[in-house]
Image 1 (cartoon, rainbow, N blue to C red):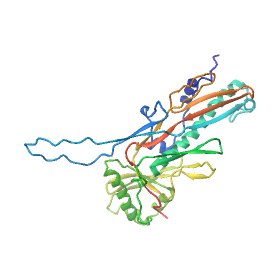
Image 2 (image 1 turned 90 degrees about the vertical axis):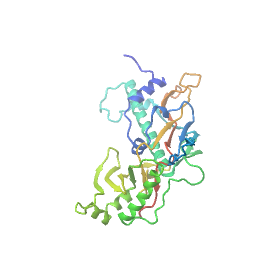
Image 3 (image 1 turned 180 degrees about the horizontal axis):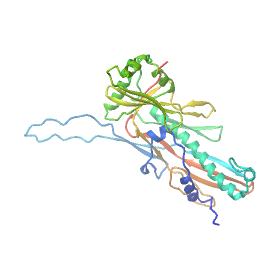
Length: 357
């Protein structure tokens, strides 16, 4: 029977490809990744074109035409922070019964090692995906992302701050005059938020709601009256249903001044670096945007593989590495990535906080 060489990065990458990853709402819906988003350098390039709504001019017959200038665009070179997680495999791990393994298993140490390798890669990928989900939400609500680097599991290092706007304030923020007490107030603000996108020719299909906002909306008396079939006004429907994503509820679809929006309540949570559980999306906030408004880009990972002497740069968004300490009989598996969640256009999301009390 052939034995896999777990020290080969490409074999580890092939095993990684067979792993079925967990799905995350913000990452999957708003920041998908294409082949063009994987760069052969530590840095990635983002391009933005604001566009305009100018019309063609009327001209005299003797003039013929008026030259039209090209729309300018901006190119930014950004360096994402590196993510790296690892797990050790000791001789004791190979002797223990694994999770889900039969009580009196006849698995050999080699078979246990292969199973642990697969499970460990899945666990590490899940942690990276949670971080990517956090980065996606940070980009949506701040139009920026601050990445805190660590020297070890407790010591903080440098901070990398990436912002997708110029100056000190971003154009993606909308401030409500007062917290929403009824649907009329909510409708006016949401329409204004949608127009901030449509004015620049950007699509808007989703209304993202924190859990407190979603609960408040369902209690609006004037919304219930409008949803009554006998009201004579067709604004949509509220039909709460679970989605394929844990903590994400599809409330229904409503019409806001011609903008037909999917109402989506998000209750995903994560554990921060201090061990506190927090929601990805703030409970009293709302945002309007559209699927595919951004994308995840990845810089390269350069490493020296076990037994090698020269740096190599394996392709892919996840780069595994397997090393061994023969003196201590310990193997270590590492999974590294260099992701960055970036918008595809200038401010493709409009965000409002504190929309309910």
